[in-house]
Length: 89
Image (cartoon, rainbow, N blue to C red; front, side, top):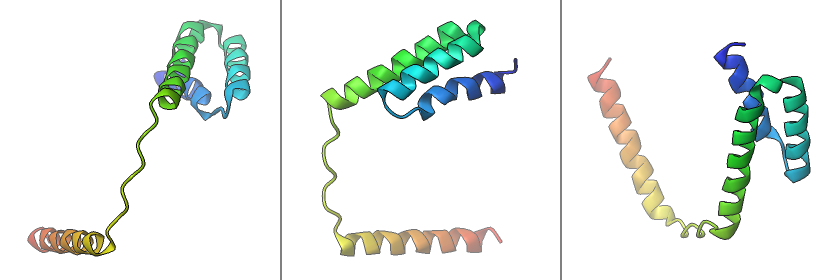
């Protein structure tokens, strides 16, 4: 099994939506790939811990965006982008 295949298999855990789906995916993958049991369990635990942490310490809401300031920042970005393009034809 290549490292890419291993990563693809483990990534399937991250695609599962919800606790029941994630648990069923873990069982299915461990049955299909018993040699990856420890890695799959490690990733499953990491996913569960990330969700618990997110529930316990939610992100604060983003402050409102000042439209005028955002427009100025975008204009500065486009200006710098044009300067870089002109300097590197």
